[in-house]
Image 1 (spheres, helix red, strand yellow):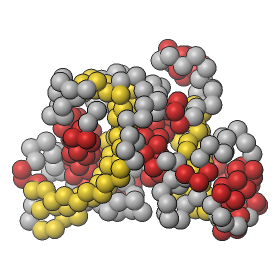
Image 2: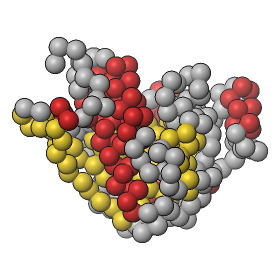
Image 3: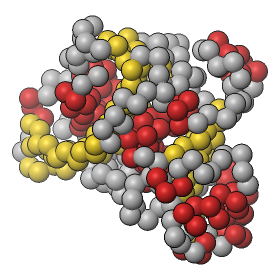
Image 4: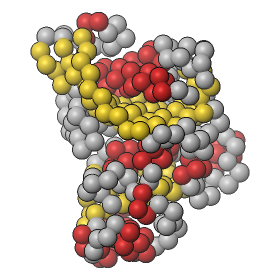
Length: 325
């Protein structure tokens, strides 16, 4: 892969963000997701690569576009794996809440985890604690390690975790240990990346979320020098067998960052849809002029770029606009 491909991928997340932003606050999450998916899929055709979705919106019978196994790109250029979430936070956009993004990760062919769209248990830390924590350790031990390596008292440590009933017991243990808890509603890609960004105020990410989001975040975390461990959580025998069918000999094995992203040449890109802690959302500046805020990271160089761009909506034929707008 080359540096030009990183900029091409940003164009794809920009397209998805622009399309879904038209539905912000309208209470129509499916329409927002469909708009993002359609725009992203159309823009992929212009990208100079031969890509295949290895983890994304679901199987062919579950998703009409960006399904696992779908081939993307112009048909020329490098062969790459793709992990994709056209709209991370469909409910966020529908309700006008913060932190929705369009996100993509790509890496050399055969190097991104190939798995079904299912639940995944995750643990993320920054560069200071990289290589020192294990997902299988008690959360109390992990907190002690991260506090020591970040030169903080436990009571000053911030753990971010999704506000879900399945996490109630874990939240209670973290609070009993004395660490601070920051809850979030949706977008565990942004939340997990925050744990690897210096001076973000987040020291540790834990919890269970989507597997596609985990693989996408792993590309960013590798670029940032952080660490991540994960474990797939098949809910039934059918999901277990699907994992095996995709080449995972032991679906319940502990996955390291290098299992999630084997290549050192991985690219992560995201564009904000609604404003949040990592990115600003799409901003309508008047007339047909809009502004987007994106980030792109490359693991090979450790480069992180923030990109602001202006777009003319009437020159974007790939966008799907709501009626009466």
